[in-house]
Length: 212
Image 1 (cartoon, rainbow, N blue to C red):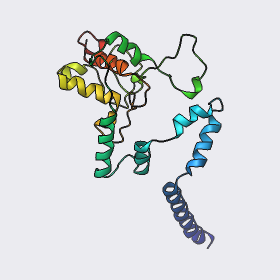
Image 2 (image 1 turned 180 degrees about the vertical axis):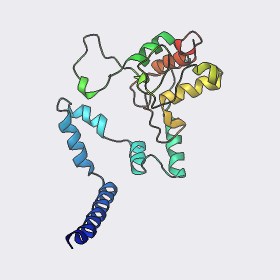
Image 3 (image 1 turned 90 degrees about the vertical axis):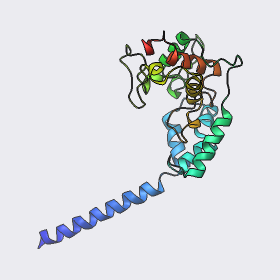
Image 4 (image 1 turned 90 degrees about the horizontal axis):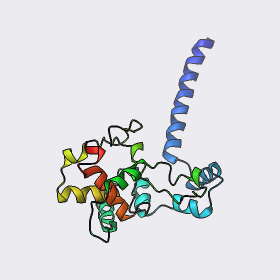
């Protein structure tokens, strides 16, 4: 008798847990509670630092609202706004110095709130590119969240269109894909147009280790 009661009770509890989990997933944490939890996790951050991290712009808000899968008309608007935001080097040259680009790609940790102490050598703003991509095949500490970029120039070519595509993709990846997971390096002012051009050269120059 007791066993007969336990089985429907377990089934009832299971249904309740599933329903509660679904409700929690749909509701999600209140933004204020979530932001407050993040602030408590990094007590060294200043209010100004948090403002730049937590205040979403229109594109971020739309991508969050639609869970990175916006309907076509909103995706088109995001892409159009991204295209209008792209800035180019004053020189007009989208291919910079691949050696400088190599250093930018290697720098990791820049911008992390856990590393807010001032650097005596000045700020080091890098792309942390190896966190997501394989670039130079000699670098073993590379991630696979993004596609491999080894032999990039051999695959994509070095035409003017390829150079422009690569520049705009790094400056603001949402020019080509609304709600792209790739950081908007140039759009956010994290890298300058000249630094973006250096990264383009790192990917496209035939002497770069990416292509050798």
